[in-house]
Structures are given as structure tokens and as C-alpha cells.
Image 1 (cartoon, rainbow, N blue to C red):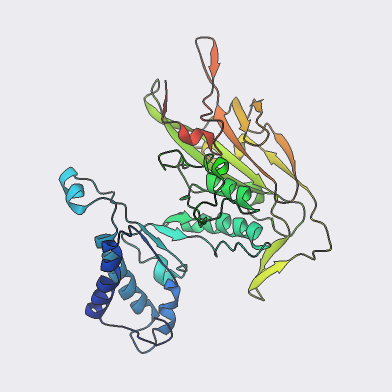
Image 2 (image 1 turned 90 degrees about the horizontal axis):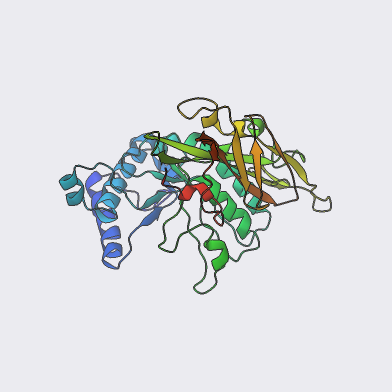
Length: 358
């Protein structure tokens, strides 16, 4: 525990602690855990070897325990098949200090932001801002987790769109029986699998240094990538996905260390957003670089547009908390035909469902 109460600095004591904590959970059928308040460990390191030492001790012992108790695939199966991609069902949370984040050796998921607060209406737009911008750094170390949400919440569709573009795990904290099945069917397949984007969603270059929560004019734009195999070419290709959100009205105040909410007597105006293929970094360089043409499909507007070049545009006007997601697919031209795979049009990330094209 924190602040000197029950602090352990012995590796043997910590092993016993985690064994006694995790074994009963596993025996009860629990298959994963969230380890919270991890950055607090380093704060109590005085007299125990220092914060970095204590964080190293706790992180290593914790990871060894969750690897033992909450692995999706048994170590025996991994060794038998010579596979080194064991999935460990652990979310690291409140762990953005460097003492923690650089210590992970086995766990790979990290919460990217503060919590989903169902009873704080102002928190939902700034939640999207925080997870998107924090993922710029966190994606280089771990898989950013954008937190749970409730599917019947007034901001549910906003959160669902964010999870679709985020390339993150999707899970809800609904009360049993209180669900929006139509919304959830746009995120998750019947078997529980998720058409998750191949990367972590991050802001596009044109809004990277804009104040998308307070300047009154800029939309938050997030891009991602969906990989699939092109069997004709014999290589992995893909399509881009771009989301635009009006999340104006709230921003983190670094001096007061709390969210600053815009004067509620002042209306939050619509913002203009421009969608371009160039917003997707993979189209600009690397193996999947292309100059076009492209097909763009909008989830909300449910329309198709041909975009001839990287700089061809789709213009949007988004009211407060409004959003749209566009799949951007290169057009393949062969035998006098033009073809672009979009995927499952009823999903929020349609091309995340594509496995291969032929």
C-alpha cells in the first residue's frame, strides 16, 4: 500500500504478497487484472533504496506473478510451438512515470488517460484529447488502452468512435442488462472479437500542435491503419482510417492541475474539419506509399467519394460532440476494372474486418 503503510522492500516478501493476492483470483475464475496506482510506488522510495529501485522491484515481481496467473496461453503451449507472443491479461494503470513505464518486460497494455467518469459530463471530450495525444508517446512502449465506457451513456457514441479509431481494447462497464446492442454490434463481432486497427490511433499532423479543446475552431483528427494481405501482390497492404471530432469546451489546466471548463453560458460552435488521404502517414512513405486515387467511405454520412490525389479533400462541419470516421482505401486498377475494399460498412472501423483481398 501507499505512503509507508505496509511497504515491502524485500523481493521474497513481494513474491509471497502477489502469490497470495493473485492465486485466489485465478481459482475463482478471474482471467485478468488491472494494476492501479503504480506511479505511487516510487513516491515512497525514500529510505528503501530510492523510487526507481522500488518501482523496479515492484514492477518485476508484479509482472512475474501476472504472467504466472493470467496468461492467455500456457507456457507449455508456447514452448511446444516455439511461439514468443504470450498474451498476459493485465492492464497497467496510473503508471506514466518513467520509473514504471520503462520497466515493463512482459505486460504490454497501459492505460492512456484518466478514467471514464459517467457522472462528469464535461470529462468526455477531454478524455478523447488525452488518450489521443498521450498515445503518441505510449505507443512506442506499450499498447495504449483508452479505458472502458458505458454503451447507454449520453456520450456512448463519441466513446465508441474513439475506441474504433484508437486501435485499443474495447470493453464496457455496463450494468447487466443495460446495453445498447446496436452500438456494440458496430464495434465487436458476435464471437467477442474486435476488428481492431493495426496501429495505435494518434492525432494527424495538421492538429498536432493545435488546442483542440479550447481554441474554438479546430477539430481533433485521429488516424490509424488497417493491414491485410493482397494475395495478387503477395504482400501485406492496407487502408487508412481517419476520425474527426468536435471536442471543444474543456482542456487540462497544467497550472491548476484540473480540467478547465469553458463558460457554460457561451455556446460551443461547430468546427470545420478537412479529411485528406495525406492525413494517413503510411500513404506518404514506406511500402504502402501511393499517390492515389482513393475511395473514401464515411461511417456517419454513409457516402462514398473518389479522391484523386493525396491532397484531395472532404470538408465537414461538426457540431459539439459530433464526429465521423472515414475509411480511405487505395483504388486498385486492373483488367480495365477499378476496385477498392472497404470492409463491413456497418462497423465503425469497416476495413478492420478485412483479412485478405484477391
